[in-house]
Length: 126
Image (cartoon, rainbow, N blue to C red; front, side, top):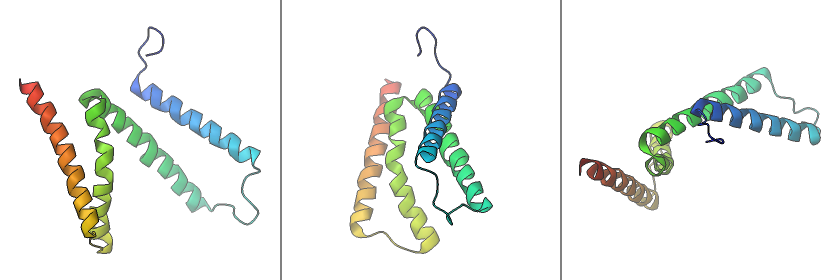
C-alpha cells in the first residue's frame, strides 16, 4: 500500500529491480569500474543478464505471487526448502551424498515445512 492505493506486485518488483540496478551502477561508477584486463566477455555479460532476469526478477514475481496466494508465513517457508533442493541437486549432478548431519537437517526442515502447511490446511477445513 502506498497511501490509499494498493501497489501491484509487478510494479513493486519493477521498482525494486530498477532501484537495485541504479544503486549498483552508481557504486560501480564511484569505484572506477573493473581493473584493466578484467573486462567481462560478451558471454559473461549474457550470463549476468540471465541471472538478473531469470534468477532474480522472475523469482521475485513467483515469490510475491506465493505471498498473495498463501500468505507471508507459508510463502516464507519456501526459502527453507532451498538448501534441501540443493542437497538433492548436488547428489543428482555431482554424485555427492549428503553427510548424516545434512540429511538430518534436511529432515528437520521438511518436517517443519510440512507441519506448517498441514496446520494451515486443517485450519481452513474447520
